[in-house]
Length: 325
Ligand code: 4ZY
Image (cartoon, rainbow, N blue to C red):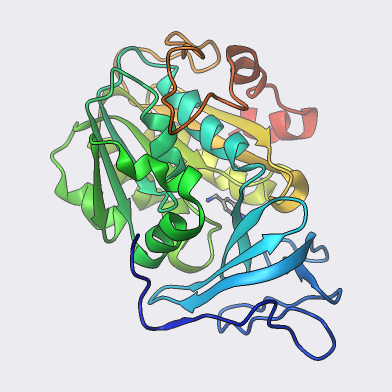
């Protein structure tokens, strides 16, 4: 078990304010409960709304060099990991995000061998990459070691991904890491970022996508967290425009449901570099649900080939914007 750093504050059971609300003071944004005993996710990224979860007990609060880290036990979604006031995963619905951001790219190319994960310090994407038996090397570059340590301590079914012998963990800046690898190194790069405020901001900008494209082999694929069609069409529009300039293979947007993410949905940019063509909408390397699980990671809970293809069907308002970029 990883030792969590000394800058960690461990509240006593259910440490709560006298009015019963659960509150954590953060510098960069506020995490505050608008309903006593509930966690409410308030952020300028989704003004005017705040999804709430009932808190049974706060399990961990800490401040890393990069962000505030909190874990609480919710009454209906299991344990919840929160970074700077924003829910990153819950035990109940993490499968939807981790499986889709991983299998959408890896099931779209034959025999992926070298995979890079940027971010993803909870280990869930690693757990999913490890299901692909063709994969020989899994590098992960996560900026915040506290996220890794907290995940190992509180989310063992997610952090199990770190136990795969193919995984090599690098703590540091993902962009610097990619710049340092020889061009054309990876078959697939998965960017599991949080929102574009705070440490993840650069991961949504054009130079970052240029760096990703260089690190991929011809016909290599990238899958990046690409926000919500209900909340962030302006951000998505910019990402799609940048990706169309940079990725000369294919550029697609897919989405899935994650009930505890803002608006209940999250999207992914799926792009390939010039080279062997990639048809993301029709998985050519389907994952065999029976073969691709170990005792430790269990069976797939969310992903299947039908939901893969369906993920690329967009509502008309989003299709208009995305197709016009
Ligand atoms: N790391 C995935 C993630 C995406 C969006 C939000 C939080 C976490 N808001």
